[in-house]
Image (spheres, rainbow, N blue to C red):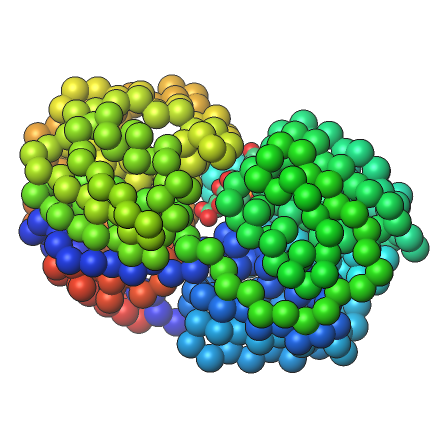
Amino acid sequence: MYTEKYLIKKAAPLSGTVEISGSKNAALPVLAASLLCSGKITVLNVPKLSDVDVMLDLLAYFGADVKRSADTVTVDCGSVQNRTPEYETAKKIRASFLLAGALLGRFGSCSMPMPGGCGIGLRPVDLHLKGFSAMGADITLEHGLVHISAPRLHGVSIYLDFPSVGATENIMLAAVYAKGDTCICNCATEPEIVDLAAFINKMGGKIEGAGTDSITVHGVGSLSGCSYGILPDRIEAGTYMLMAAAVSGSDLCIKNVVPQHLAPVIHKLNETGIKIITGEDLIRVDSCGGIKNTDIKTLPYPGFPTDMQAQFMALMTTGKGSGIVRETVFENRFMYVSELNRMGADIKIDGRSAVVNGVSHLSGTAVKATDLRAGAALVTAALMAEGTTEIGEIHHIDRGYENLEEKLRGIGVDICRIREEQ
Ligand code: EPZ
């Protein structure tokens, strides 16, 4: 057994160009949706991430023919059988629960491990199940497995108490073959939802309203294979923007992005005094002289993304003045704060808010990633910290950042991955 760590030295100003990969949070639902189709699917711009590997393993377990070459994945679900996913594999990623909607849509039943909570919150799936039940499914929970069955799902109007991304996606998947129309009201409007709907429509589905707070899925009889390219990862892009903002004097070009998807992050960075120039598929960050702290409040899209909260907090640890960070989406998304304070930050948590008072500098020490975006925040802090920072538990980071070391080295960062036998 071994553990891997990053060693990151205080960075000189970042410069050059970083290319953004395909979106993890679009690739996972699109790959789950491929189960709905018995034809061959080609998905382009699929990031090489451990979460994606798990989803591909799950599809192969169901009997799909899965092939991967570079960032292209082909999936043929023609001979898929309906079976309960292998518990330990499914438990690795919460997105495995999206297979429920696809299996329900295609086979009319499924049995899935009940997802547990994770570091950032309880992560219930009550809204997913409420949608399936409203469409006519019977649901029982036994020995940690959710058994869902509905010989024929029927269209219905469903109101989501919270615009849950996963619930919106799962109900869309279950509704593709349902009898009649399904309307999902107060649904999520994230760009990844729009990508999933575009993919399903390319297979022959009929989904309208994706990107708005009301989606209508018209049930169809069949889908056919297609080729589809995943949209760029807006959270990866936003993370590199904040890294450039954190290292004063940086001039970084971030390519393969949709600037509109980063609008809340761009507005907040402008408030701190960072200069942002946007092109058609690129964003340039010019961090001339330090930042002024501001307040952020996370909200469902198009609000400030919760997946950027930790990274923005890291940025503000050495900014001028104080900033208030309010996390409204998840109930426990400040676990990384204690690690930043060990580097010399001055952050005080009060429930779902935190106040960060800028300090003169951070200093490198040994810290641990507690979840994916917490890990990204520690990398951002390490770029600013005096000396060398050692980041442990970096398997969390491998879940969501493709080729992080290579991309950071390419813009001037001294980073290396070390392996320690346990
Ligand atoms: C997706 O998670 C993303 N993951 C998350 O990204 C992201 O933080 C989140 O959306 C919000 O944008 C993927 O897309 C794979 P939610 P998801 O359902 O679907 C509550 C990352 O770092 N809720 O919108 O699980 C829930 O408890 C990850 O890439 C219910 O109460 O998020 C949470 O408080 C982290 N009941 C809130 O809604 C439900 O049935 C948002 O959850 C479902 C959710």
